[in-house]
Picture 1 (cartoon, rainbow, N blue to C red):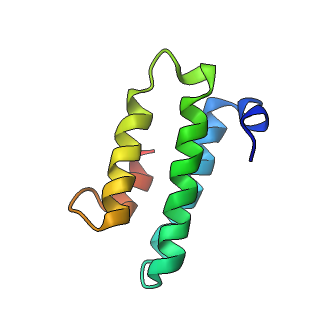
Picture 2 (picture 1 turned 60 degrees about the vertical axis):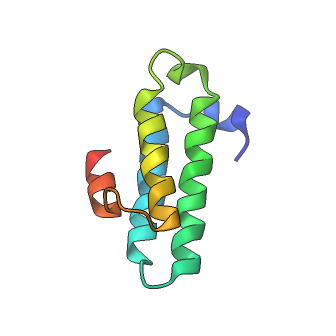
Picture 3 (picture 1 turned 120 degrees about the vertical axis):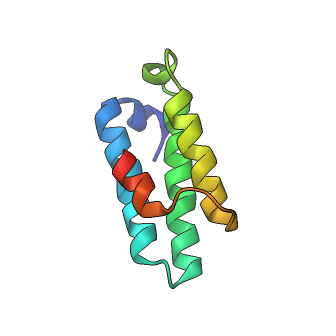
Length: 88
């Protein structure tokens, strides 16, 4: 997805797209390649959101979410994906 297209989506819907990728990653927790692909896509969506002016006033929630997803991606301890999905 391009940044121009992403900017046309509301902040709430952007979070919904990110949450969907997290949910998909949780469903594929046994298949690490699929799980990591979903996490990469969620992180890409977060990066697009961080470039969207809608989030400039308060990017902290996205930055915290990105950090937790990065931890999950590398297998470090942190929140599990189900908890991250619920937090969104």
